[in-house]
Length: 330
Image (cartoon, rainbow, N blue to C red):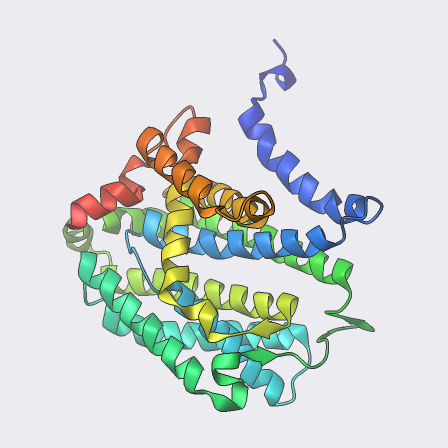
């Protein structure tokens, strides 16, 4: 049997998926599906944000119920920079990411003093603080939100109004995100984070600076969520405080759990499935929450480790699933 014939569909699936994303805008335009180019962009941004939460919660054991708060910090940091006169997408995205990282570092110094359900609740509390701050910012729209008046600049005459250009940039950042987090999982840093999740006392006894490593993971994942928020702002041209509500943080946790917390592709699968259901189920029934709820319950009952476990011949990390972590921390 040749080596080519031994390649499993599971190994080919990521390349097929990324190839389909690359080809989509070229196929969508002739078929009159231009609207779905924006939808796929939103889907990739959601997958990117969910992947950062998967690393934080699934591999780091830090189940945060305030991840949407950092999406909001990134979005409103970008709004502040736009109001300051910056029009370059690159500067805005880098600035929003750095501001979110600084905020995450300050917040992390407080929240990482807690564990388990206390950590979950204090991250929720900080996210709610960010929500009420956003509501009170009348200069940035307050409760009504903020609308970008003009497209942002990529340089060389291209701006965010060019859908194909923006799609290509979002795809590139999405692929970079997957490479970054997948590489971290296999790195010494990732292995240390997993070890701290499983037994922090032992890792500390071995000489690992557990608090610093957890803070680094928290800041990195939160900053990436802030970048996702800035990208959402660029793509939608609008942001409102509703994006920061705790329900969106809970939705992100559900998405990661459905796809498979602690599995590399778990967040991508979960965010993809969730996004498709939210987009297409309302087209068939006004009671679209019912079939979505039934499907979620079915996955919890018959695939408690997430959908990724069904496609994996070798479980990657059952200790990193949401249900296992919650039972351990209860």
